[in-house]
Image 1 (cartoon, helix red, strand yellow):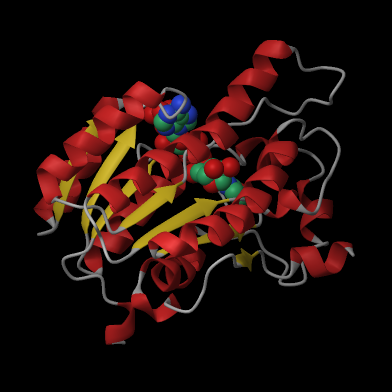
Image 2 (cartoon, helix red, strand yellow):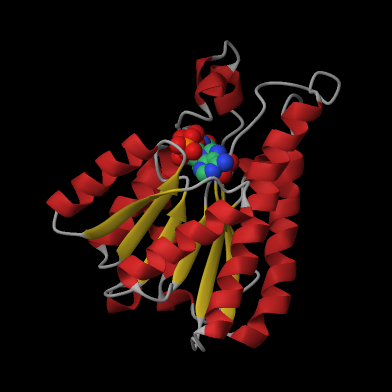
Length: 256
Ligand SMILES: NC(=O)c1ccc[n+]([C@@H]2O[C@H](COP(=O)([O-])OP(=O)(O)OC[C@H]3O[C@@H](n4cnc5c(N)ncnc54)[C@H](OP(=O)(O)O)[C@@H]3O)[C@@H](O)[C@H]2O)c1
C-alpha cells in the first residue's frame, strides 16, 4: 500500500470548493499530501482548508479563476510559497451550460464552458510546466478530470461534451509533449457521479430509465473515485502517461 502514499507531496487542486475537488482534497491529504486548494468561492475553500487542518493535514486555500492566466500565476506563486515546488496538478474545475443543444446555447455559454473546461487546463499545464523546468524538478504530474461524455454523447450536453472530448485529446497530446520534462499527464473520466453538476440528471423524470443503461445499476459515489485518483497522483502510476481511466460502472460499454 505504500505505493499509493503521497507523504510530503505537494498537490494542487482546481475547483476545490465543491464536488470532486472538495472530496479529492480530503482523500489526498489523508494519504499524506500537502494540498493547495483553488476556486472562485473562497469562503468554501477556506472552510475545507479548516476541515483538513483539523484532521491533522497540511492545506492552504488560494483564490483562483482558471480562465485567467494572471489568476493561475498568482495561484501557483502562492501554492509554492506555502509548500514549495508542486508535484501534482489536478485540473478539476469544470462547468456546464445546462441541458442545452447547440442551437440553444449562445456565444457566452460557449466561451464560459470552453474557457473553464479547456483553456483553463491548458493554461495551468503550460504555467506549471514552465515552473517544473525553471526549478529543475526531476518530475511532474498532471491529472485532467475529463468525463465519459468525451466519447459517449447524449443530446443536450453542448458544449460540455465537446470540451471533455477535447480535454481527453489534450491529455494525450500533453503526455507526448511533456514527457521530455519528466511530466506525466493522465486523465480520469468519471461517469455519472452525484454532485452539483449532475444534479439535473438525477432529478429528471428519465433518471430511472437512464440508470438501467449502467451495467452496475447505480450512479457513482465520490468514494468510487478514491482508488483511481490515488493511483494517478502517486508513484503507483509511474509508468502511465497519456492514459484515460474510466470510472463509470460500465456505462460506456453498454452504450456501444
Ligand atoms: N459530477 C459528475 O457526475 C461528473 C462526471 C464526470 C466529470 N465531472 C467533472 O468533474 C469536475 C468537477 O465537477 P463536480 O461534479 O465536482 O462539480 P461542482 O461541484 O460544480 O464543482 C466544480 C468546481 O469547479 C470550480 N470552478 C468552476 N469554474 C471555475 C473557475 N473559472 N475557476 C476556478 N474554479 C472553477 C467550482 O468552484 P467555484 O464556483 O467556487 O469557482 C467548483 O469547485 C468537472 O470538471 C466536471 O466536468 C463530473
